[in-house]
Image (cartoon, rainbow, N blue to C red):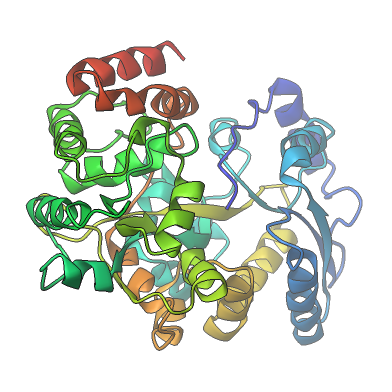
Length: 414
């Protein structure tokens, strides 16, 4: 899943263009007329499958809904921001858009609240834990499209060799198990702790959330909160106890997961694609997937989601057509085929139920109701993420409170 990107604020000329378009009573090229309506849909490519998957969905939808045509445009993530900004500024905003951060569009009043473009059954089907992340100022604008979650991968053979009878559920149990596994020697590490620049903000997040903290919300960042400081101090304690691999502050997640796959790490947080990585590279590995341990054992996971949004182009026929399409797309059979082929988790309750028998996905699906998210709508979030990537690994050798205070300062400075 691509990292959310902030599109520059849709400047006044963009809003004026949309208002002018509305006043003319049309949607430009492909505007609705009579009993027919054309929707323009702009999406990024997640994989080589993306274009074909959307074309299949659209073809089947159009066959079942005479009079609605959808023009699909798939662009790269690198080009997406510039393409959508150019369209908005030219008064040709897409009707349906899938991208990263859309808070600037909300600020410029360009989007429909999602309850105006989905039916009540579809609205109620989204996982409740995903709704706050799809909302701004208490109003939901995004239809959660794809999800990813994290869980603890445990090498059960190493766990048994270390004399540990069950996978840990709390921080204290994890520290005990990881220290015992590291004590086996032979280059084995108890817990894989990637605090390098690749994704330090993600590793930190599961510890922050697991201790009752977090990054904050759309208006306030709380990186140096007492709960986060306590979590960072616990992580430093793992390092000091020799429960992790060497030099975690310089270790990135992807190469470290390769080490886990080869059987040299006892426990590490992973994603759904890790299952396939193990199947391809070490199918004999004995492992299980369990919830991430937390301070008190209550479940939590770091969730990531992208969204579909709908631009209000001043056309009632288009609004009705968007609603028809969204309700069709998020029906369990259509949606689960699309989302699993792309390699993600469903954001709907019905989608999760439909896939509950999938052994590879089940541990992650069970965690979705407890997912917590980055405050991506906060204007300083990207600065915060960058500061975390650069500095969080310093807790290996420096006072965690001082490190988090430094990150908070850098994040607030933007």
